[in-house]
Image (cartoon, rainbow, N blue to C red; front, top):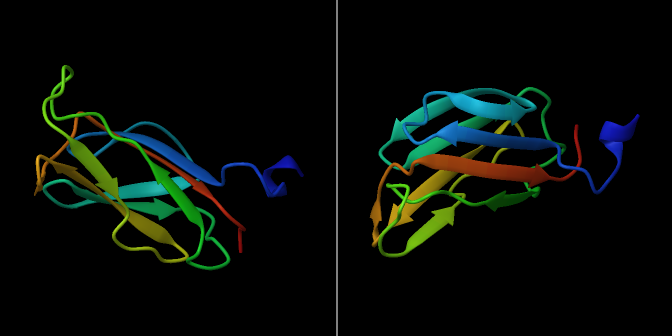
Length: 106
């Protein structure tokens, strides 16, 4: 089937900045808000290892944005990954979290 093709995204999310709900998603069963500026994205179908490519892009803490932000995946497992949003050097909840995972499904 097409979802096993090597180059296709195996998981993607767009979540509200509080990390409590999705705007939309694929292959993600739930989100866990683990603290200010940090969410855990849990997969429906696990990855074959924790070396998948995770690409992140978040929206500033306001729709107009201020300063600089840095999106980081701080933890990876076969069943989930964490997304961190740093703004001006500190963890902060963004307006939106975005993330895409490419790799091999288990």
